[in-house]
Every structure is written in structure tokens, then in C-alpha cells.
Length: 185
Image 1 (tube, rainbow, N blue to C red):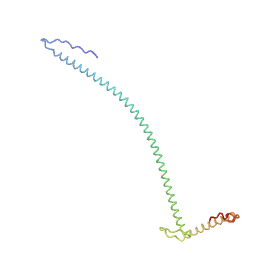
Image 2: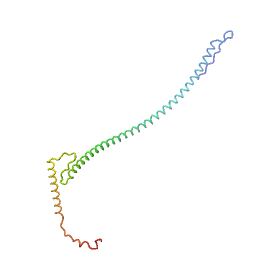
Image 3: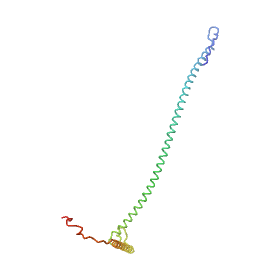
Image 4: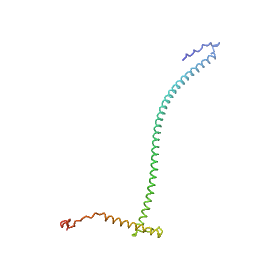
């Protein structure tokens, strides 16, 4: 700091009265001293604010870097979850398609079962009329009778072939195999 100038010794006005210029100079010197003190206080406050600003900048830069790191990991996790969701959605769609196919196949099996139950229900192989079925036509009766005859003939032929294929062997009489002692009282 510069030295403050010494107040000028002014000559008093003749008659011992103080000079008004001296009063103005003294007032200005006091104002100058107050302004210097005020400037020094402002410089100190400015230095403190600069320090706080630097600390805040460093802190916010670190927080920003941490937030970017967390944001990056959150983005990766979100991408992973989206991929898993898409895979699950594809699996769900495939499961729904398979379920629809299974239901359609089940309906076909039920219809076939019902049709066969109506046909097997009668001794002559003719279809049983269901409550909601219309009466069978003569063509239906003839076709089912002829299919019954064909099935019957195929069964008889299979039985004949089975009987012919059985090898003939000489059988031992049962009295030679079982003794009286084997019989239980």
C-alpha cells in the first residue's frame, strides 16, 4: 500500500479561524481511508469467492464425472433389460403360436373322438345319431355298413393269418406236467 499523504499544514486564516479548505481536505482524507478499507474488504471477499468458486468447480466436475459414469452404467443396464424384454416378448409370441396350434390340434382330436364314439357306439358299426345330428341318409348308412363289412373282413383275415402262422408243436398232456401233490386241497 502506498503511504497516505500527510495532511497539509495550512496556514490559518488571519485571525486564527480554521481554513475551510483544511476541513474539506480532512474530510476527503477520511473518505479516502474508508474507501481503501472498503476496497481491501472487497478484495478479501473477492479472494474468498474465487476460492469457493474453484472448490465448487472442482466438486461439480467430479460430481459430473460420477454422474456420467452412473448414467453410462444405467444406460448399459437399460439396454440389457430391453434386450431381455425383447427376447421374452419373442418367446411369448412363439408360445402363443404353439398354444394356438395345440388348441387347434386338440379341437381336431376332440372332433375325431366324438365322430368315432358315434360310430363305435352301435353293435352294427353304424353311427349313432347324436341329439343335434340330422337323421342319417341312406348313402351314409350304406357307406358306414360297407366300411363295417370291410373292417370285419379285414379282422377275420387277420385272425386266419394269425392262426396259420402259429407253429404246430406236440403238446404234453397236463397230467404229466402237474402231479397230484401240486394240487392244493
